Image 1: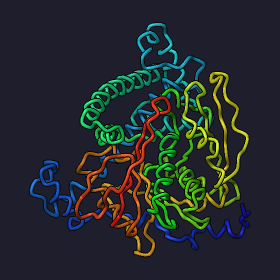
Image 2: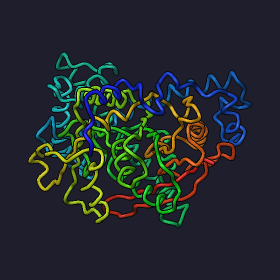
Image 3: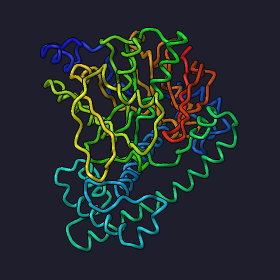
Image 4: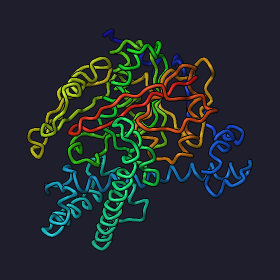
Length: 457
């Protein structure tokens, strides 16, 4: 791997030589004329506010919907607060709580002890980045920590959110079961189960290696079929931030929050020789946490400091050989292996590895604030994306919103470009984006996922 000079790093940091450069200022609300094809196609599925749509109704609804989507981020962050309560180890010495053991752990005092420890951690984060982020969130909700009574009310607030999350889990399980019954094919069933599954849930930042592995498999399949030429510009929509997963087996908070998918996607493209080292990647997201996180990473990279990613693996959870191999090699094309953070005694048997992304590759990633349902990025024809990756994103929207998103993303793609999404998406006749293939990961113990390829005509 050629080492890049400090002068070259400075040029990348300034972004003046960046191919396909986009900025948040270029994200504009979708006009009524641009939305008309979807409004006509799904006329029977429009929200009540868009009955007999016109310019005024559309503008009002679209901006209201954008605000609602961004507000759902707060609910997703509160879900992370609950996940931290149940599975976090950085603020407490109490055992973790499994959902199925909730009643027993409540009766024996473990739940109350974890709530008390979490309240104390939120009151005094002491350099814990997750606690500091969540403290700001709950303070904005009017929760205070200055007096014993206020801390008691903070505990009540946390338990109220726990109750909400448990009820949502029950409702989503029912919805997933109903969706699975509609398709006998295993791959199609995975896509059908996910489609719109979380359409009324808070938008979560949870992410995991399975989605990255699914993208890698999809790119392998596409290359075998000759369905993707040389990639120079990539977009990743909603890559997520490893805060603390809702799945206990993947829920860790002993290392700082991190985003993996942008660098995993670049790693796969380079390994498969689908891209060169001049490739650029744009993260499109509505989360201030993700956008700020990537901006800090770029600031560090401009000082020749790389970006380190931790990859824990629960040894008790069997992975198929191909996924294990992917875990072992992930990152070797965008960086190099480093010593991982020591694993707490709580996680005896946990396997882990780490790698540091080179400053050069960090600086080839940029971020823009973009709501794919409500907005479009005005990108010149010659600078549009060859590849768009959007995993664990579309499931937060209903069919109408998904159709709007595709209609917005399509003009950002080059003809022949691919959108990779692990969802069954509505194919508007006007967008020119149609499904051309699918690959699946279905090992029950490691997880299950399917990736569909949507091609821009």
